Image (cartoon, rainbow, N blue to C red; front, side):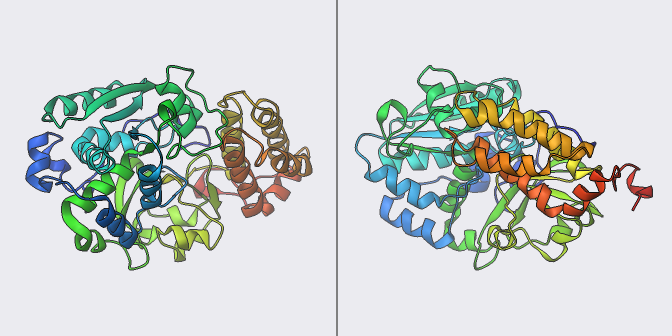
Length: 408
């Protein structure tokens, strides 16, 4: 992988312990039922207790407790909607694509379970507008489903980084531009058509399905007592781009290519945080463990560039500056300036103080989290690679040669 911004990718996952345990048999409903059975009709209160016990958190990036979101939706006024966001605006992520292509009925079972618990009559599926394979896989799976007295509506998202943001998805469903807007209430309280809306990504609904289909004990069999279950990761390293399912608590050495932990790693995707070379050696796939050292798992994207992390971060920042909705000052004006300032840092012509100042200016002032996530990634690369910043200021770079002959 070169130090450049990666484009959208497809994804077929390898066999995993839970979500991807049946992919060898194919994506059909018959194969799915043979492995997982029928989901049944759980009641809200026992399901909330099970979700609390396993600690299921949303897998779209923020990691919000899914049980609390489900409960908030159930308690809000009005008949709810259920929305499965498979759009993956993050161009380096393809875990939801992998689920759609290999285990679509697991995602749909989770959505149906949520709809039944909430008394919802509609499930909305947001697919990437340019990925015809994902859309075809979902539409094929829907044709296989029996009449569940639940309507399914498929929406095609724009090819844009911010198109998968919650308010952008609600806008899309309403027939307006697929861009985020300011919202004073969460979608669980006031979402589509002003009604409570349970919105999460494909992996989250697949995790819900695994819990309901196989029970709490089976769910707890993977992971650690503190963080049960598994996670889907989209990994970019010397082994290529791939989706893997790993139990929480897995050592990063077992996840990455041979020398991956000894190189800089961007965790969480383009809005993620940087780990210095060797920093992951003593860490595991753990939200809590990573959080303790100011790292984030985010949406499960793991990038191991083969070049300079400053150069890679600069490319990403320039891309993100052009991917905003352009509706508020931090995105329209702040992010382009931030990209230019970081470019100056990478080029060794000052700009560090200006970069840090601009990070502070764009944070917590946007209509969505796009400026915050961009600033987080920029702050992280400057903090983790302070020595490299100083080296660039002197006209040098530790990564100008290939990895066999790196300069000091």
